[in-house]
Image (cartoon, rainbow, N blue to C red; front, side, top):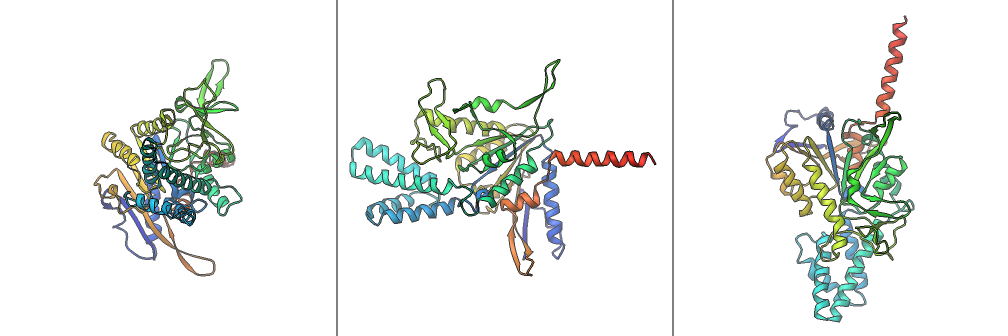
Length: 409
């Protein structure tokens, strides 16, 4: 049985619809109308979390289970490793939050290094290596892996629908906590330009100044007139990426973070989390700059932030969103996820929309099943508007041809 939820603040926007066969259609149409309206705002931002790369990559909870299995396996030879791991998990609020667990481990490692407790240092190092290698192996997927093409196809459809905005509107800003390369792969496959903070030729190094740049095309060579290209997005990987490494070889760059083509665990990857105790000052800079951009973009007037696949488990990100809501009176936040246990669902603010639930569908065999409406594939296929300007141009061409044909009669 279907269970569709659509809230604005604490107001149920579907309460006026009567239950019955037409409820699903009316509810989904109401959601799509509101999303279409919000997409007319000048500044559109997306925050996408680990849920968008499922099932090719486990979400945070699934990744934590994989790490548990890895620790269990390496602990067969040394029981004390598992004991230390379980002890640390008890100290974090959410036992599936790998960022918090790694943060404690790195803090503990600094203390042990200064104390010269070599046995415990070895255990701490083994735990860190086990966790990070397991995370890396699960994130670094390719077309050979199960569900890869299925997940990539959803990303491609996402960008097909949204990337080609009117040139008079701002380009899309995609903020993601994901470390995988689905965004980059999808954008490259569609020949969509993107700026991710890295620039250069053979060697691409991080420089936050690139986020102030855009791609433009020459309109008139005689007067040097330019206009921004339509097929371009800004991509901010606020938790890093599996293809970022620390590289101190180039002395002619302020930031020693390099983007590589073929990530390998043997490299010194700036893999996952902006853990202050893990990185030195230079490595901390990309995360600081990326979060600053996130904060700055959400303060732009007439903005909307669509949140997909993110569970509101990162207090740093949550605080940036709350600050934007407190400061920017013209921002709207649309949360497409079932997060009823999170604080943002209790706020009485009509600028906050929540969409989640499931619809009943039927297979060709007649078997019925439930499909969550807040999953990435459903959002892309069923809810998001299609603002592909090529289709709009085709429609305009067809209208002109029809008009001239009938005018000549």
